[in-house]
Amino acid sequence: MIHQSPAHAYYYVSPSTDPYYNIALEDYLYRQLRPLGTIYMLWVNRPSVFMGRYQCAEAELDMAYLEERQIALLRRSSGGGTVYHDLGNLNFSVISNDHTGRGFDLKAFPEPVQAALATLGVEVVRSPRGDLRLDGLKVGGAAEATSRNRMLYHICLLFDTDLDELERILTVPETEARSRVASVRSVVTNLKPHLPEGFTIEDFKRSILSELERRHAGALYPLDFRPEVEDYIREQRETHFEHPDWIHAPIGRAK
Image 1 (cartoon, rainbow, N blue to C red):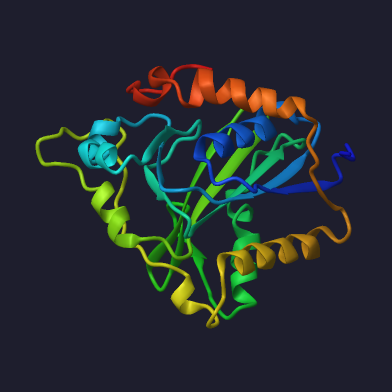
Image 2: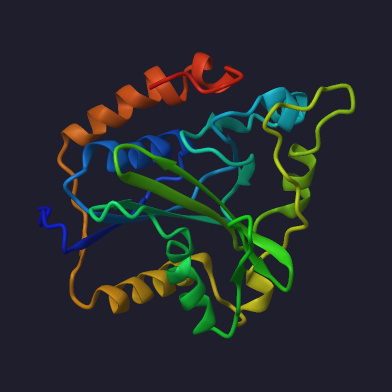
């Protein structure tokens, strides 16, 4: 049961590693649960590539390699660059309403992640571009979307990602033209080597949730969905997120 109050915050840890399912679920939280002022989602995907809304696949990826490896290709509703996901990557989404009319403080969205890592002795900082960096190396790429005073913020955190595969997939063949909104490449690193020995991605999820519980002081609730949510997810993945018109359009099809 959902306690619908703008003073409360809510969270959901997805049990699925299906990228199409997870992005459709995130879309549901963003578009269909407007009465809930703040929602957090933690999710992990099987190998997949997520483009920003205004990007062109051929300009961002080695498409032949992607097809050879049967790696899923998706387009987000948010802007930003192309990112690679795998089972060593933790995604942290924050969905929030602005009731003040003053806009959103983008610096505040990744703070729970930064605080959770700080308790483990790892300091990450937010760069002017909005990503998270550890000793100057990128460990998290962020993007946002807004709709009627509601923001979807998500950050892709490199915990134990296959960095060789990431580099291979995001290397564009020389013959391909660059897109109008090309990704800005950064040198990346994983968080795991800097964390206590044996620390897992499940431990990382729990650390972030503990920080969220501390911040919301008894006003953080788990989400429990009704069966019809699955119908929404099924419809959205088939007609939108898996649809070639959305994935391969040079700019995202209006929704």
